[in-house]
Length: 147
Image (cartoon, rainbow, N blue to C red):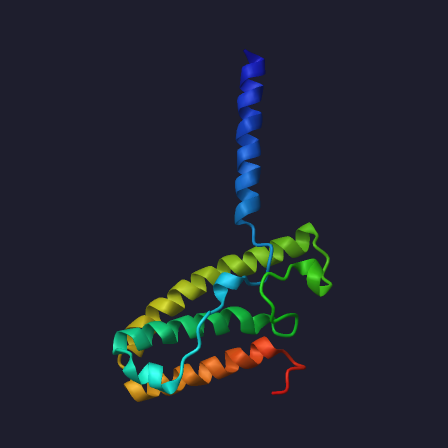
């Protein structure tokens, strides 16, 4: 009987460890945090106001996710050790705390901007999107990328 209980507890702990490993962030930001399409002014002028707001929010999200780490990296999926930081429990906890807080902030930021940005003039939205996309392109080029 005690062997069965031990086995059940061991399986449960292994499952929790696996779940914890999957939810603990291993990188500063990932490929999914980045946009995959850039627009021309003509594309944006043909878009509806709702589409412009969505595009604006996506660009804002990438910038607020990547900018805090530009001194370390602008490449997605970079781990602590990839940028010369020891991957010990202290640093892992710091990254976890940051990513948890960032997720809450991102949700709040998106909610408030979704409400307010819809009042923006379409021309201002278009110019803002193009400006953010220009910054994103420069971030991806990096410091040695002729900008």
